[in-house]
Image (cartoon, rainbow, N blue to C red; front, side, top):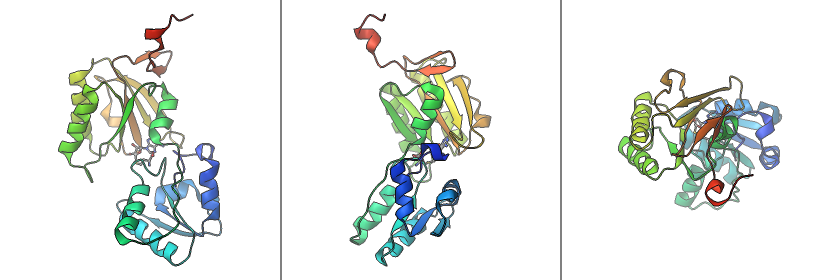
Length: 239
Ligand code: SAH
């Protein structure tokens, strides 16, 4: 289940209820800290980064023993989160357990809202961590997305050199002045929002708690908002 980007305001009631019903809560330490107000009386298994496999197997073991388990991701559990791994392990092991995926507000939507409306037209989400996806695949996907003029939300900018390469790919297909939003710690303590352009990104501020949104060829900035038109202007005369 996903607990949204940060504060309690952006948790869904369904996610809160799933945690309330759970005997055991499993998750990455940082996310467990985000929901500490919901953990009273729960058995908690908090493991570190890169221990996803351990977390998923502990969760399945506890559930097989009869416990109700909540596996917590930040944002949404499908989007570079725990849901696919848990289901994948179940599909491989053939265990039969009742399982429910509870959606959450993913970082792209949280960052997009803070920037105005950059995701107003077709968009893609790209994972930039080369940990599970080879660099060539990341660059090939970036090329396809850039060519097709999608807005893109870049997650997991763990490797600044790779991020720079990906931005160069976009620069080859888009103007240097294309609006870019950089959002760190959306709806969390330490929230920062920067409006910049493809040519002027400050890579020094980017870290693992940052999501970067690159506009398409129609995206523009007005009054501090990034706007990607849906296309009404092509069809209707505006009042
Ligand atoms: N399941 C999560 C994503 C996990 S991958 C979701 O749906 O949002 C982790 C990446 O998500 C981070 O490297 C960052 O790019 C992005 N991210 C997650 N929470 C964020 C937040 N509050 N602010 C900005 N970026 C965030």
